[in-house]
Length: 427
Image (cartoon, rainbow, N blue to C red; front, side):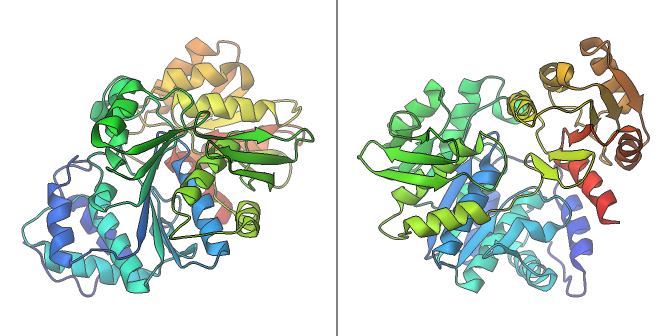
């Protein structure tokens, strides 16, 4: 039964939510829809859903940045957070306050009755309540896991996008891109524009979009991008003949961000009748966008790179981005990953780019141990130096001590690993 929690702090609430449901992940919409209806959460503003294995956080943030530049009041819901829970719920790119989130949690607790909700489901409902209370013009919502049965799919989108389809969370979504593609296509809707920015979309995603009567648009066929000769600008195009020239590169680093930006502009084109934006808004939004730990290079020497990539698809992109950084004498890697991830697949793609490995476990029960990581790294990078540590903070401190000014340090493998590195820099 629900109980009064009027005096709880946000941290206390989050501890409560972690223990509320028998399992951390429980795929299905029945429970969240029941509580949604009890709360009367029926938004009268536009909702945009963004899914995908990687890149969806970047797409959501770029989209919100442009919409804010155009003068709209924008709610943005992303996950997971890095340092503070409030990062997940933003109004005009500013995190919600502790007090506002706590008030939403209390309202959900009072409304849910005997219905048990997961941590993510609770947070998703709280985000929508915040957006409705703030009177936003549009909500940009990132899918947490999959799509079809994810809590954000309890809300009706005016358009949806799947950024890409890779292998991750296989125990929940299936072991093949075809199975995962079907799950991700679950955020598409009949009669609505459905975007896919994967250059090789699974047949199941295409088939599901066709089955439900969604208006599927594919990158490279229906929309896309071209780099301009001088390399400092790019052009967006679509099959209808629209071309947007002289666009600035997004402020987020990495060549792959052009693909993300292309799907952002395709989403904006899909909703141009209800949320029109000008070319100046697009340029300003791309130039001003900020998102931590997506190939984020921190100032100073040695160079420190933060990247939350944690699957082979992300590791392939990370490898290319590292190659584009220029010459460094040595690369030190601070690596921590969850035990259920494809650790060998990630390490194999980066083994010949890393000279010294600093291995540690993020402070989570499902993290791989440093010894487990060392066994995998040792097989795939037999010539590299390998060090193991009790925690991520010690691993990062050691990397900073051992690296010369001409070296670089890469912290990657998990949101939690990067968060613990960021926390050490805050102290």
